[in-house]
Length: 188
Image 1 (cartoon, one colour):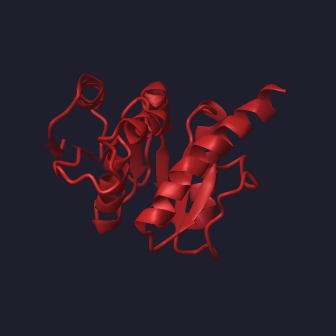
Image 2: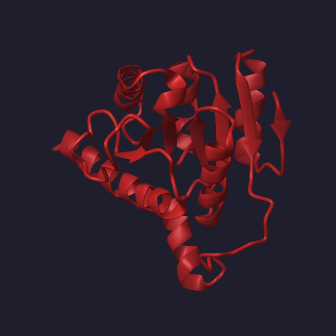
């Protein structure tokens, strides 16, 4: 395991389970140490909104540990969540599914996984096994952001690299909404 900073109990259990199972790859659990509050989340209304967006407080980023991942971590922290960055191109979906109930979002960097087709295949495997997990696919190979539920069989939103904060926050909000719509369409 690469690094562990200021972890909550769920994150500790997740990290211990990963280490105990001897899973390969780099897993970094990080939280935003900054006291900055650019969205005013310390106010009651913003705090309630953050809890609604990140009720479990933990999300996963499947991609390279780079500036894009760190930016996503900072932006998610402003929404009340922590981000675990998993730098393993062939991420074992069994490990992911074991802990899916503890996760608010899965952010998949398709450029890290390979081509878009490989990333979509990965997302579809996760979607079939854990339909309750909102999926955000990010890629430099798409024409633009897709915040609709049009691609709901694979993911809840698609965002185009390079990302900015407003784009990411809109993606988080849309992913939760679209995932609820997806689950409703599967049940009905």
